[in-house]
Length: 157
Image (cartoon, rainbow, N blue to C red):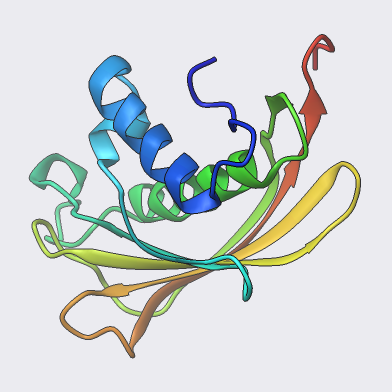
């Protein structure tokens, strides 16, 4: 797959290449619709920041981002990192996610997604994510934790 890590490739380069691949080749997927952009990548601290912009179709009748779409944004950001951090070819589906809503997000208002690798074992990765409005980055709107299961290639779920 075009999104596997090349030998000696930096994590930042892999994430940017993977996001570009989704945008160019998988145009009818949730990854393409969310259109995440990597803003920073700190491999030493295992912290990554993405930006995404909710579009009008993601909004509920109150005029705020639908809760399920908020969960999708944080799951997609954590899932990108889990996939990019996996130890070899394979998949990393979400096996558990907990989401808390603190403040609303809005359409066409950029969202910052701060993802951090909390811990990992041979087959599980635990990540956390905080989503905030880009205009007010210190006020968390959504916080989440997720567990991702590494399943090597050649083995089906």
